[in-house]
Image (cartoon, rainbow over all chains, first blue to last red; front, side, top):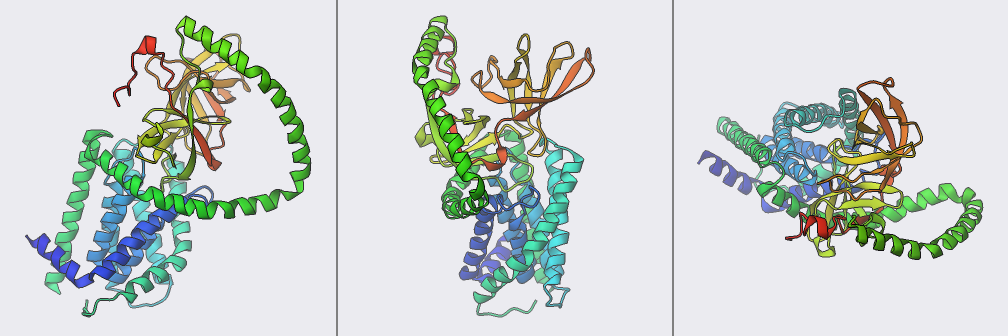
Length: 184
Length: 291
């Protein structure tokens, strides 16, 4: 009951145009990640563009939108990976989206370094959480060295992408700002 | 303010619970069930986008790599022409030999060999966006005759197997994925040595396990797929060459590294073998005959 009410209000608060922009950026990020970015790897490592976009959405729109975008973005990632356990990325990205959205309320700085730092921390948590959950759920394990290398390089690559991606997502979201203005 | 954050927490709990339900569902259904269907649908939806992006970005990559190679092109051209002439001469003798071979195999009740099977050429349109999974998406699917468990090759050798099929796209699990395995044998020694090939990711060689320490295997010998009852790969597809043999002679099991023939980092086009090679006389209609 409470959830339904929250969802209903969330839809009305955000507006259809904005939901469209969020959905489009989540889908486009994943499409780019699985085509262009798998070729533009950093030492063979694919960045998590999807995570950067979800952090940008959460940082712009707050914890509730962040959690929902994280859930669906993560679910799409899960569905794209053959023979993986569906729901792991959804869970991890939901938590990251919510946490980033909550953290945003305590920052005022408008510097690009803030989102870069947030992306670095989120990537570290998300990649680590994903690796741990995957192994617990019986996915094959290459080696601890490999996993640590992946985490370090994904964090680095995601940070490099942030100055390019964050302003674009933020601008697209603010362009379709709902008419009612909310004070958070 | 209080109500808002409370509602946020309820939403978060609902989404976390939903994720855990999904994980449980998928874990318990073990690769089948409703979530496998959801995977099929999502890859069918995203495939056209991937196809579009690949069509746009591939020529750009090709252009840059060809600039780098301009210098060597003339001498390479001459060398390739000479090789082509030789290959043509050999090719002329092939059809007769192949036909003889197939006829004799049929008489003996053996499997049809992989290099005479019908194939479908497919283009690689994407890769899963994950650093722990080695697979590719291809632009052909059920409509082109592709089914799960079919072997996928390229001109160099074995690439992997089909693990998921949509109407017009399919997913190929590469041989280098830790979940991939193939019955294999080392040829070139006094007698063939059988074992199991397993993937170790893109940065490591394949490993050949299950080879007893008494067997003699040396570096440079070729590894091909082996016949295995219930296995999915037709025998004889090239896999790679032995790159290292560990463990003392006489040890319980040898650790053998195999360098694959296929360059898994730059797969652009692959071929799917439309036949699993099971002899209909021996194996009935096969596992997927009902589809």
